[in-house]
Amino acid sequence: MTDLTGLPNLSVGDVLEPYAGALIVDYEAEAAVAKGEPVYLSSDGKVSPATSAQLCIGIATKAAAIGEMCPVIVRGRVKVRVGGATVRGHGVYGADSSKRVLDLADPDLGGTGNFYYARVFAFAEQAAAAADDVISILVVK
Image (cartoon, rainbow, N blue to C red; front, top):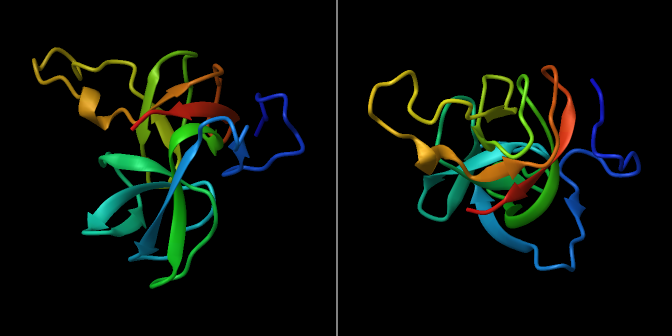
């Protein structure tokens, strides 16, 4: 694991520049959520961690048990763990089975004609070489 953010004092799930326009919304946790995990709306007003290609809304900024409120950054910059190589500027989506964000390298998914831009909820601010590298993303959902 390599932290590519240049911000070793911050951990995964920490918001970068929290007072510079970041938008954090509280949702009820429908499943246990760890800080730094990509989350999706699993029910009305409730979130769960993404464990496959789901329509994520943001990144949990604190851990939450089932039924607790979970703060989610839905706009702004945050540190995350990636599931593989990531290109700076590419859209990212969530997630792999280890709850890490993934690079959407091919939005057409192999020429199917089905474009998956809706899966993108953020953009990578650094390039990553391997799974478990830590980068910052700009969440724009």
